[in-house]
Amino acid sequence: MEFHRTGVLLRAAPLNVRATLNRSWFGYFVIVASLLPACAYAEVSDEAITALKHQMKELQVQMQQIQEKIEAIEADKTDAAPTGVVPPVPDAKPQGAPAATADTPPPAPAATAQPWTPSQPITLMRSGGAYMNISFDGLMDVGWSTDSDVRALEPGDHDPAVRGFTIPNAEIALDGAVDPYFKGFSNIVFKLDSQGNTGVELEEMYFLTSSLPWNLQLKGGQFFAEFGRQNPQHPHAWAFVDQPLVLNRMFGPEGLRSQGARLSWLAPTPWFTELTLGVFNSNGETAFSFDNPDSSDITGGIPVDRSVHGLQDLLYVPRISTSFDLTDTQTLVLGASAAFGPNNSGNNADSQVYGTDLYWKWKAPNAQEGFPFVSFQSEALVRRYQADQRLSVDDPTLTLPEQKLDDWGIYSQVLWGIQPRWVAGLRGEFASGAGAQADSELREDRTRISPNLTWYPSEFSNVRLQYNYDHRQGMGDDSSVWLQFGFLLGSHSAHKF
Image (cartoon, rainbow, N blue to C red; front, side):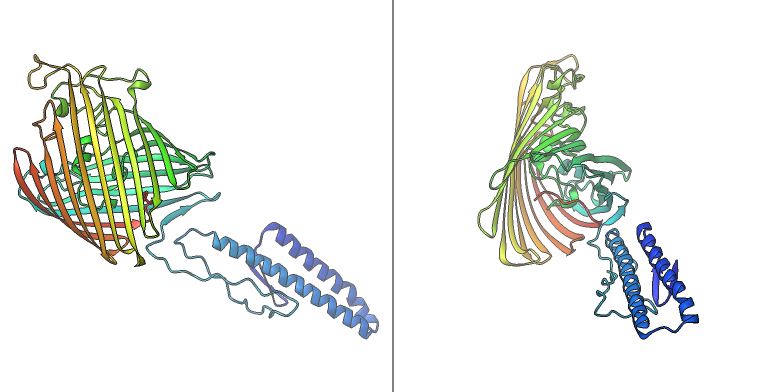
């Protein structure tokens, strides 16, 4: 609501401002009313007229100051508007408003409308500083392989599944501030299998503290275990079309994730050093090397029912990582991880997985948009699987002996940022298994070499062409070519460097 009176614009304002405004108008009315009889029946001196003009000018100044306070309050509210929403633009100068004088301060600058850009998140706001970012990302693969059974070559859950077209991942991501103490994150994934059927899964859902003392942070819910570099990453952040073979070997098609909690501590060292300990449920398909219902593919035996009787039946994932600058243009990140938990080959059997990882990056001192650059990443993992005596899947009357199954593997990849928006990559891999069922597809010796080239039309889309040369022990060589398109809508939470 607006009122125009003596050239001053009044708007709806907070109660305390309106009260001040009303008192000023009341005082102005009293002064004018008290002077009317004197003006009507007596001669007014020049001094009285001068004093009256002075009082009128002071009232005008007060009214102008009140108007500026109202505009400042409205400007503050506009500045607090959600990102991505264009705030209303107040009138530059209301009709009839008095011009600024030497006795009055200049009015607050008017907010200007800012056009929306794709870099701004889709954000929902409510009072108290809480917000929620919403984003959606999708991947589509198309290609061909010399092996018609593409899943035998590409066992990852987000790898190409068939000759022709695959939709390996479509993800809705939600994140935001719950209150001053917690943040919330959720990732809901849709995917199509080789038959075109749609699957939906709650990939991650967790809270994260934001105000614990002593450099501590607590995370709880369902999430990827912080083991190595690639396991915690979502498929849209991968540098290659498919998951490394050694991660498929150790953590299965979907990676190592489960329900649990993680505590991290940022050590007070001159360089970045973080220690984390995750505690998870050890059962389910996403705890592949542990209490996994498909463990028969690893051990050849019928799995037993492992329930939680104590802390020894949970899965523990410790990790230490450190990062420092070698020079002004080079950064090195080192990490070591482990995972300990029970497996279901017997009531007293357990599994251990160990890993080390390295990441190095060089960026030119005169880089433009981050280019040119060269990065190198490598992970090596070892698994020790203790298999108890168990009944054979092929012949339930046959008891398999107690065995130790050892697996190991490594991948290394180099990326060359040739020029803005163009990145060339090369990855080499090897995975090996020894012991029972060593001739199965899950534990055979495998080698793969993968060159690729990625073009980024913008930071929200990419087109990737990749060739895979696979060699499988006892099965020969295969070649595959894959073209992938990926896009991102909204603002997705950043992954760790």
